[in-house]
Image (cartoon, rainbow, N blue to C red):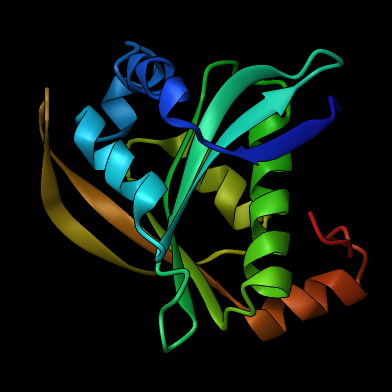
Length: 174
């Protein structure tokens, strides 16, 4: 698997971030933001906005946004994970690094996300990485075909620790 690095997003990255969101391969699976929303996520202390870089030359291959990083209940949301290249294991590597960051650095109790039900690739990835379906928000987002449901999933700190003990997680800080 190609090495992957998370680095904080810079304002100079945002034109690229917006273009990746609006790419036809990604658009059906997300609700794109305007540039000012991304700027807010960079500046707001409760959020973390990352560029995902891979390869020897650390080319940008995607981005991720965490929200609730200062949540008093220890509940951090994976708001967005978008990759340019698919099918190379980079999504799995990104999810694992984000889990390690959320549970070891941010000391979260719960890491959660929602994913469109039509995004079967992402659903399978999150399930294989230990996320548990909590419920569905039926037909809650409009899509080109009508409406789609959101699947709410989460992973708890004790589940993450159990996966680490079983060797299913990398026990390192990102």
